[in-house]
Image 1: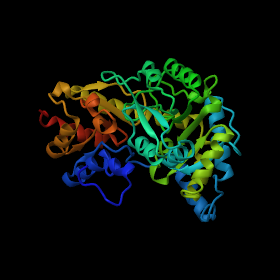
Image 2: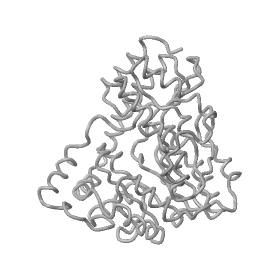
Image 3: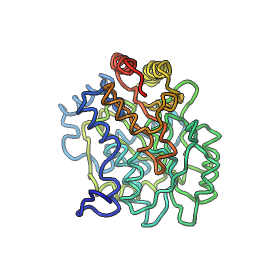
Length: 391
């Protein structure tokens, strides 16, 4: 391998750089509008911000909070799951607060994966999944999504299972495709997990960001799935405070006890005052969540319609911050080459799906765009793209 770092362990050599770092670096170099990275450019609710300020002023969380999360936040998480999904969660034994969803995922991988265990992941995937599995010395096994529609090929899951399969990582609403798994798809996945005694790690960071009638369904609510599922949540995505890094994992007590054991030796504790703020935020009225979705959906529609008008084949986004487009109608077949051209010639950054897959050629014709930006920023990006055709 070229340009290897002799001090880096072998299993991490392939993960020295990410497609996000590469494209964001080019975006900074050329002054491009960054529609590659998925972070909002506006803050979340003033009520939640003020709750963090009040917590700091009152000295709540300025020192080490309880190792598994402040009780008020764990109680709020449990209540939230009950309210939205009719899930019974014991806040004392079935919840752990983490430094963002990323730490929840990594703690879960390190807790559950032995060297050589196989982890099944629908691809394309968010890049930290494969990295996390490698850190735990596991083996990633990709389950390809359809190369035309980007829907999950749930029937392909069975054929990828071996005697070493242990964990199935599920992500819905799905980053990077914007697909929300249907109840039928989830039922097929659940039946397969039960048949082969798989543990399911369900990344539901975008649980409240779904559009139209594509409501999110936690797989843990399906029959037979509660006792084998670790569900990952993210306050950063739900409240547009990604820098606060407040996440959590919930699940049956034995699985969460395993996650807690590892997590306490990573950051120990974090985000003290922000935990208090998120606890209050999770108690907001239902209208907050519907208004949040309505606002995000308007941004989705703005960018999607604009890209379609410019000649892209748009894959309808059912959830998350993202929409994917097929670039072949514009005469491009390499997503990486296309995205580099966008940045240099148009001043707009996006992410090629080829950088988020173990089989780059399968998804080389797709590009992911983030619409979680101000409407004026999205309009500026579309104006830049319209100045000349990318060929």
